[in-house]
Length: 241
Figure 1 (cartoon, one colour):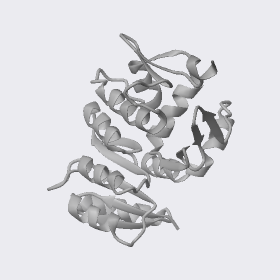
Figure 2 (cartoon, rainbow, N blue to C red; figure 1 turned 90 degrees about the horizontal axis):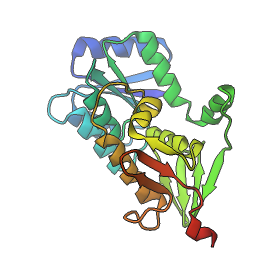
Figure 3 (tube, rainbow, N blue to C red; figure 1 turned 180 degrees about the vertical axis):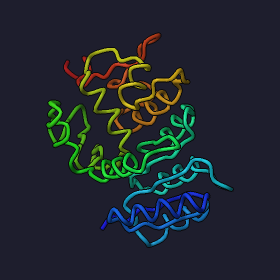
C-alpha cells in the first residue's frame, strides 16, 4: 500500500482528500502546515508521495519542496496551485516539484496524477506504448542516464533526478542536435501554455549542467542558443578529435 502525505491547511479539504485517497487504497496522512510537513517527511516514517498545497501558513509549499530536495529526498511531489497562477507552477517546478494540479480539481484527475507519479519504474513502458520507445539507459560523454532508476551516473557517483529534470533531459535527448525554444519546453515538457516568465527554464538548465558538464560555466553538451533557447549535443566535436 502506497503512503501519501497530504499537506493542506484547510481542514475540510484535507479531511476530504484523506477520506477519498483511503477509499482508493492509499495510506493517507495529513500535515496542516509546512513545518509539520517537513517534520513528517524528514522523520523515519517513509512516504511514497506528497500532495502539497502551495499556500500554507508559516513555511509555504515552495520552501517545503526545496528543503525536501536539499535533504536528498526525491520522492514524487504533486503541487496544488491556484488556477491560472502559472508563475506559481514554474516556481514550484524549479524548487523540485514533479507535477502540479490547479485548484479546484476533480478527484479522478488527482488520483490519476498520483498513480502516474507512483509508476516511476513504468516510464519506459509508457513511452513505448505511445510510440516513443527509448532504451532503459542513455550514455553521452561521461554520463549515463538511467530512465527507470531516475538518475544520472557520472564518474562513479549517482545523482538522483526529479521527474521534471528527467523529463527535461529526455526532451533534449529526443531533439539532439536541434535548437529547442524555451516556449516549446514550457508547452511540451511542463504543459504550461500561458504567457509566463521563462527564467524557470534557465534555472533548470543551470541545475542540469551541474550534473552533466565537466565545467558548467563552459558547457559542451547543453548549449545556449542566443535568442532561441538551447541545443543538446551528445558528442561535442572536440571529444571526437
